[in-house]
Length: 114
Length: 115
Image 1: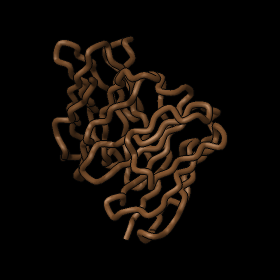
Image 2: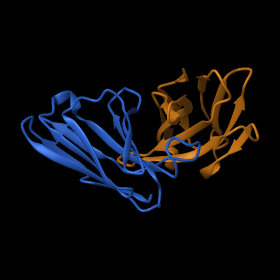
Image 3: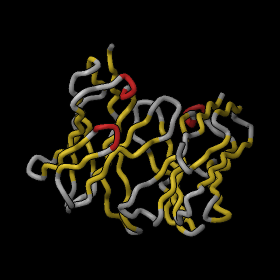
Image 4: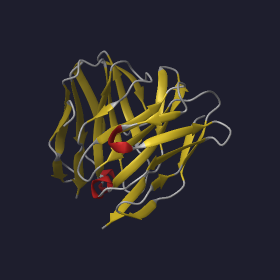
């Protein structure tokens, strides 16, 4: 089991719902990431936080809103999603932002938007 | 810009036979390269990484990969497949961006191991 946990593991929501994904890392890392993994597509980087400051937003629609209250926690707030947003959302952390050291991944939240 | 191509979307081997998962990369400088594995309903786990040290890199679970600059390849191998190796494997290259090195993921190769 990795030092990165994600909740919930599975989520089904309607297009008008508001929900949040939570990620927590127990590794003392300074950087955290949200990735989207869709079927038959490469992993897509969504957001990057370094020391609680957002350093990258990869042209992600505003219906996805990240929050990093401290270096151990990362949230992804979801509202008015579309069916094409159904995917596996992975959180990762690393010691420094985009260093060559390893990124440690959580198990992911599998999201289904109806 | 950096990119990575995994040449096979699916690979099927028999248990006890060798595994070869192919990866080619494109980078304008000396890259760092990684292989990650993802088992069903699990997150990604690092198998091994190359960071300009020895060109033959040994990882966990008996996997290894060889960095070949002349061929821009970083193929993943294992001498003898085990049923527990069945998973999806991602080749990853680090790419320079404003804030540091961004990880660029390949599309993945699904490894099936037959008994």
